[in-house]
Length: 502
Ligand code: MLC
Ligand code: AMP
Image (cartoon, rainbow, N blue to C red; front, top):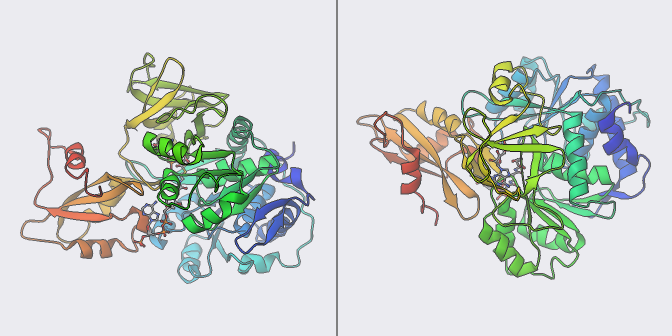
């Protein structure tokens, strides 16, 4: 195949009149119309002088055009680099600079701040709205209807997704065509997706879950998606009766359960609910089954590995577990040295397969730290595998908080807090939260004689850190608890504040 990703996910549906997207305003975009739009974007992109392999950084709201831009990057061999819409210009500055992006596409609203930023990094800047507007759309106007797909290999990069680390700056996870295609094929097959499926899509499209797991499966199988701008309970309740499948983070399911209008009737047309990106409580699984008769199918993955394990479609969907390794994916539970432990023992989960990424963008040392020479990837998740193969994620060896499915690295928040006046040091922890699973909480030790106000500290973080990373609560204290080695005892802090949001 000349360009496996484009040909398989997109080109295969060229000219198909079947719906691809059901839009919030009732509009329908057919596969054929979607691809025509993508071709016009492809002309616009290449017209800027971008070459295959160049990075296209994209921070736009969710829309049909945003997905067409993804398709256009695939067709032109450009590397798609989606960015969380919550990131501040200060955060974006790093991503654009580090990736060496040739183009930054933003919303119209962000353009005044981002045009200068792009220019400083030598990147072009375009805008894209949710309603067919923007300077990218202007460039696409009147372009020819055909575009010669740029040949690419399965080993060529399709996307870079930035992911934070426990130390240092964010790292760009390089995902090849093979990584994305192998995973889409495995999941579509395992979860029985077909052209008659209607996937309710309420996830953001700048992460693995919403972009690759959800969208690539629908594209691969020629199905359609109800494209909601975000998760809002009312809109989801209205759309569910028209859908056959939904994918979500656990917060989606707890929010649905919290609404008495959500019943088995709402789900009458549904065949599958998938959960991932954060742990689904066994009690949520059970409450969902009791309410709807559906057993949520939980799977496990990561930006670097795409999806690695899944509960079965037909077999037992076991609450509290993330199921079995996907076909073609090997997993092992290891000690710190990478030596495999006997079944039933807790260790760090390592993963190998065509799903595993190619390394971190221009960071060979970081890549070597996490991707072993035999290509097993060190996930940093603590797991146990039973004799029957089922994997349970029991914790994290990495200092990471997952809030509503978004990752927050405490170190990044601590560094921002420690730099503020009146703060001697800080410890940022995840505390159980009924809606978000975990909420970010900061415990701040004041400089002697100082008493920084939590509200002032929060205000000072604005503009530096995306809102979802900012602590929901900041507690000011005299000193942080330390062990005899002088290390801050985060476990003790987590225990102290365990019921803060109960
Ligand atoms: C929004 N806010 C959050 C938040 N999302 N705060 C903490 N954690 C979150 N996840 C903040 C906003 O900044 C805002 O703050 C306030 O909450 C309300 O904003 P909102 O936009 O109205 O939020 P809401 O709609 O409630 O969003 C919650 C959510 C959303 C759970 C629906 O975060 C979401 O869609 N999460 C999915 C994330 C996801 O797709 N993860 C996949 C990663 S891929 P303020 O202060 O301004 O009011 C991956 C691999 C894998 O992990 O395995 O899948
Ligand atoms: P990200 O780096 O955003 O891709 O987040 C990946 C992390 O999300 C994993 O390393 C896990 O810690 C977590 N995760 C994903 N799916 C699950 C799941 N089903 N159960 C528990 N944790 C999960």
